[in-house]
Figure 1 (cartoon, helix red, strand yellow):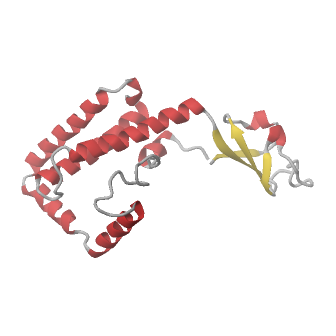
Figure 2 (cartoon, one colour):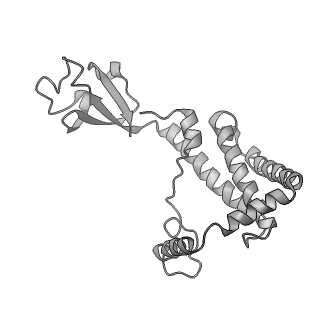
Figure 3 (spheres, helix red, strand yellow):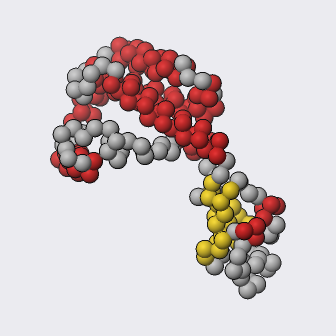
Length: 205
């Protein structure tokens, strides 16, 4: 099933490959990425919720001042994006960058309140780095134009379905049969008409 733009904006697909230590840039004194991940899991299982309560208290202490700071931080993030080529503007890109701008603002507000221990600008830089990874991934998908497709034939509802009438050892147009009613195809997005078979339902893998 092909995801719609609204779904893509709400559930972001962000590649994590290419970091120095798996999903980590630095090990913070640990011997491996696995060791750091295990330490983070153990720490968050032991201590959690404290910073959240402190953040809420900070927000409520002077809501007008905090809102003004949030708008300023979001504008800072937007300025970073505006410096990029036009591919970062409008449509789903505009919606996603607003989400990252809010994340950056939240991190900087928490830092200013003394809740993170980070240097000023760290949250902005981190949010922008992840946003840029997402943006570059979108550009790569558009350029390649190739995905895996799973084609499932509706054998229960279509009397002409090939799998209902004895099955196929090889799918149409070079499709490879991987299940009784399923075929895998690599290449440009295909349509029901292009595969020349009735009642085809196409899923993007």
